[in-house]
Length: 373
Image (cartoon, rainbow, N blue to C red; front, top):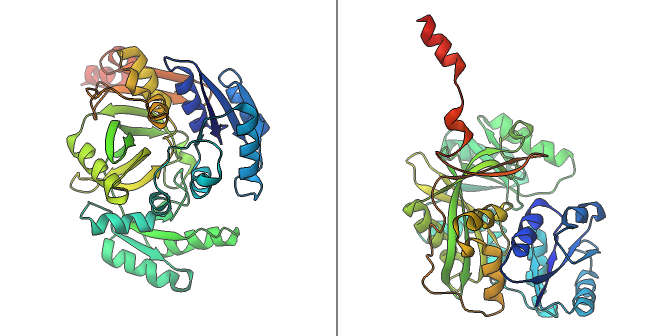
């Protein structure tokens, strides 16, 4: 039996990963860690053992993980949050278990949205025009962004997930005071200004081995959980998403990964936004960890008989150097138009376009207006 450790497992993304592993066609022993005891409760029915650990930035952290690895006979470690990915990547040689991470350089670049945008631009990949904002030139940098990109512009933190520090800004004053607001709270994030991309919000989840794409699937985010709580309308995880088949998305997402890491290994979760002309444009790649809703594809795969839609399981098999059938498709592994609908306290719902409640909903207002006319 494989024995794995999932770090930072107590959030929704960790739950999705562990749930996917639990649904694999073989039994896998799962140990989990988190800094919050309460959050480990989410995994009570899924994991085999549970550990509260220090923050991954603590100097003792790697030693604590090695103690767990020894005690639990752990063979493989998967870090889920970005900060854990960075720390374990930089210390991978010190871990007494396998990892299956992208290169250190790739993770360093991809956790910096400015550096990754520059690399894509150099490689001729469509990219949102980007300006680095310096505190000592704050207003000048923002004015330059408006001059070059027009209005609105997009302000965001250089690193971090969940739409960290992001907002659209329609004038210089809004953008300046947005950053000053964060500074007033003692936040030291670095910021960038980017061209605003108005089109579809797309996610491309993929697993790689030695520079070869093994499996992937794209989806469109249609609605976010509590969007009105964020100025940007983006709160990090979708309430409604649907699978899509789009050759251009597949092509550009693949090129974006290879532009950063030609020998790509492990997980690359690519965010893309369409520009004014409808061209899919990469905005960031979460390297080394899965999107929040990885169980979406796993669950859909169970319904439609596609075992390799369980990408966490494919990823673990590759980490263990097990073979994957060569005849599985690299792209579009699930049917198009599969919706994943979920929200706080509502559970999750998988529905196929044309088969769901929407087709039977009576549009009373339209009928009343028609009758009046």
